[in-house]
Amino acid sequence: MSARLLVAGVGNIFLADDAFGPEVIRALDRRPLPPEVRVRDFGIRGMDLAYELLDGYDTAVLVDAAARGHRPGTLSLIEPELPDGTTGAAPPEAHGMDPAKVLALATHLGDEPLPRVLVLACEPELRPRGDEDIAPGVSATVRDAVERAVAALHTMVPVLLADPTATPLLSRPEESTNPSEESRGASTAGLPRLVAEGAEDR
Image (cartoon, rainbow, N blue to C red; front, side, top):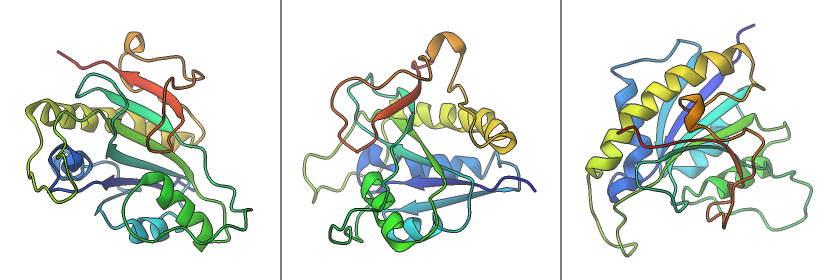
């Protein structure tokens, strides 16, 4: 049986480069992935994504903007630590689209283990200063990264379909870190384990 793989775009289309994930999903309309891959833009619907993660996938790739202190437009492939669901804490909040909170919510909602989750992240250049600011449209730097993310997905997906436990390289070998290397510095989105990082292709 073929592996089932989810590619999920997340982000707010009205908050500048936070729209990276939805923009990648739109670009995939022009370069579709194999039919055994479900491609969907979840926007800021964290509850919908949490339930989708419980639908029996082997692997899920979340496509998102994430500030990690790199050059704007840098792509990173991150494997977060999944919650174990054994704590007796209060239920996670059901609103918003923080990837770590979505994973915690999915663990709380379901009895089955979550799929393996990878995050294809892009370092943003433009970010609104406040939650109320509206700034539709991504920067030119992140726009360029959208096409590189599409190319990366077309490279990664066949590897993950063949072996959901594989660690695909993000870009050229000389642009990728050792897959076992831990990310350095603070992790602002609960995404601690860096799998691969690609330099901006210029």
